[in-house]
Image 1 (cartoon, helix red, strand yellow):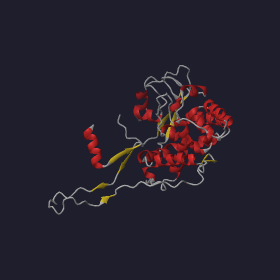
Image 2 (spheres, one colour):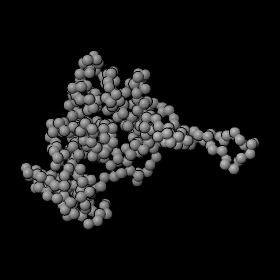
Image 3 (cartoon, helix red, strand yellow):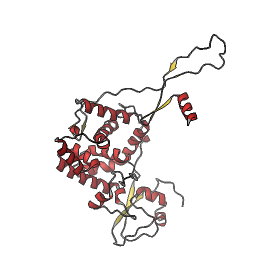
Image 4 (cartoon, helix red, strand yellow):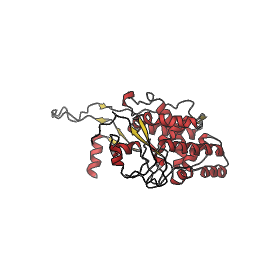
Amino acid sequence: MQILKNTLAAIGLVCVSGLFIFSMQKAPADENATSDANLGKEKPLINDYNVYALEMPEGLNFAGELVPIENPDIYERMDKELLVNTYWQSNGLLMFKRAQKYFPIIEPILKKNGVPDDFKYLAVIESGLVQTAKSPAGASGVWQIMKATGRENGLEINTNVDERYNLEKATEVACDYLKKAKDNLGSWTAAAAAYNAGNAGVSRRFKEQGVSDYYDLLLGEETGRYVFRIVALKEILSHPDKYGFNFNKTDLYKQVPTNSVEVDTAVTNFAQFAKRFGINYKILKLHNPWLRENHLNNKSRKLYKIEIPKEGYYNTKP
C-alpha cells in the first residue's frame, strides 16, 4: 500500500470523488546536467489538464418546471451535479453512446402515454441505460423496477421470464407509475422524486414539512440529489460541445434491426433455437434479455415475441 501511495504521489494522480485528475507537476531535472550550476534549478510547471468552473445555465427545468437556482441552496446542489457529471468524462461519453441506441425506443412510448420527454433522462440515472442492470435491492432493467411494482403492473416476473428486462414493456410500466404519481403529488418534478422514494414517501414528507414543492423538501442524500442529477444529465446530453464532449455520429451505438418471431409453445433449448435463425445463444440473449433461462416453460401457451436480428449484422460461427 505504501508503495502505491508513493507511486501515485510521484505521478501527481489525485482521486477526488471518484475522479482522477492530473495535477501540475515539476518537470524532472535533466539526467545529464550534473554540474553544480544546474543543481537546484527547476524547470517550469507543465499544465497538461485544466478543470474549469461551469457557468450556471439559464432556464434550467424539468418537464417545463423551472429549477429555482436563485435560491443559494438550489444553486449549489445544481452546480455540484453539473460538475460531477461533466468531469466524469468516461461515464458521460458512454451515456451519449447508449442514448443513441435506446432513446429512439423510449421516446415514442413516453409521447404515446403523455409523459414528458425529459423522463428519458430518469432512465439514464437509474441504470446508465444498461438493459441488464440490477440493484442490490433487486430493482432490475433500464427503469430499475422492483418485482412487486412490475407484477402489480402486469409484468411477468419469475426465474424463467422477467419482463422488467423488456425495454418496451418496462417503459410502459414506468409511464403508468409516473402519471399516477403526478396526479397524486401535483407536479412532474415530485413524480420524478416519487420514482425514487415512492408515492407514499414523498407525500408523507410534504405533509410532515408543510410544503408542496420538491425543492422545498429536506430529504435524504439519494432522493435529495435525484432530480438535480436528472436535470444535469439532460443539460449535458443536450449540449455535448458546451461541456467538452467530442465525438462523431459514427462513434455512437446503434440498435441492430430485428424481426419478431412469435412463440406460443415451450422452447426446450434456446441455443438450438437460435441456430435456426443463423445466430448463437449469446446474440439471442442480447436482444431478448427478458429470457432468463436456456428454455421457455410456457405451460399457459402465452404468446411471446422473440427478437431476431436481421441478417448481416453479426458474424457468428456455427
